[in-house]
Amino acid sequence: MSDLTKLKHEFEKSSDFLVALGDQKRQAIILALLDKQVVHRGLRVNELTDVTGLSRPAVSHHLKLLRDVALIDYRRDGTKNYYYLTHRTKRIQQLQTLLTHVTTVMEENEQL
Image 1 (tube, rainbow, N blue to C red):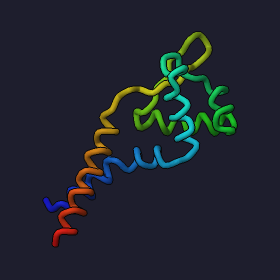
Image 2 (spheres, helix red, strand yellow):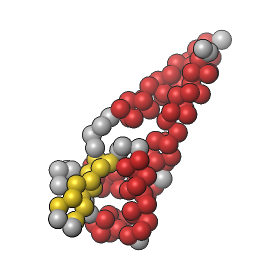
Image 3 (cartoon, rainbow, N blue to C red):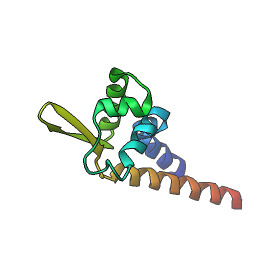
């Protein structure tokens, strides 16, 4: 398999993760969840609406996309849901591998 074909497959595997990371509102949610003060307890949707300035349905939509790529999860406490980063790094490592391979191909092409 050629390097470019391999990269194409890696891009395809990472596409949904890249889309999830590419939105500024989702980035704001991720940053809010990375805050040291909330990392262990998580945040509720209403707290995330304050951070992002989005409506509850919009925040819920973004949370679903982030959950679909296994970046966040939630725990239920009575009637309240608390969202937190999953700390599953497989998709992040997959993205790092993709970027490493892109860099390698670029460097090889530069030497030609």
